View 1: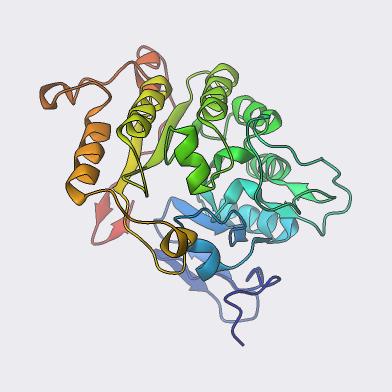
View 2 (view 1 turned 180 degrees about the horizontal axis):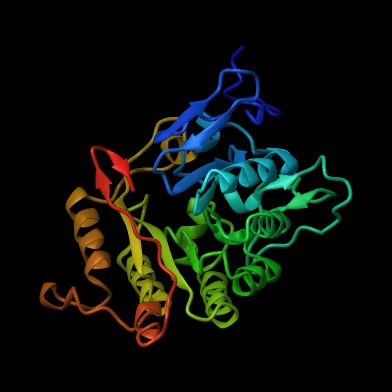
Length: 318
């Protein structure tokens, strides 16, 4: 059966095969034994409802659907028993998680702030939200560190930021995909927020989570991008002080809204120049590229931090 675009299939009952682990026993429900692996990934949701104009994901991963929370918490406990020290929760829009089968949870849906909106209108109603799931997972395995990726900036409500700040085993590291710092460009991209809304989210994250580390995604040279729109992106990057960024020059994807309705009209050399300017940092020449503005790393100097160390030998992590 082809379940690629299913509205229900979450693969919750399919046990993952994890590299670096070996199966202990052959009976049904056999456990997995950690050989040397310290970190593991748990897929908690699939699909995307956002329909950004440049993105192919909704057409290849289908609509959003979330695994039952109980199956996720059970997997967390199993991994903790196997000695796993760090778990990353995965999803195409991981913080849009919504287990509608959990009728006891009535947390209303809210965006990061009033400047964010949803293309998809059916996010409200009963069910467990991501902040509640992260709360349960981190309590179920207090000796395990938790991360999550990849989120959408619209789904960082105050209660999620506060939980990250409060819970010692949730890493103080947020990925906030910007894509562009121009409100007009964000509108063409169908991102559902403005430049000002994103900057307010950055301000909220830094004020609510002391020492938080931020990363982002950007696209240079999207359809019709002007020099002024590019400069807006550099301004937001300067304001946000990201620790690192995944940066790309725009390349058209078939079947997307941009491919059908927009012209890929920014010259390739302009895309590359703008990409390089973003990588160097706003207003900097090549000789200044390594001198970043003060960030969370600078604030941690002189403090004690718990760290995870590992090395790779023969393709195995220790």
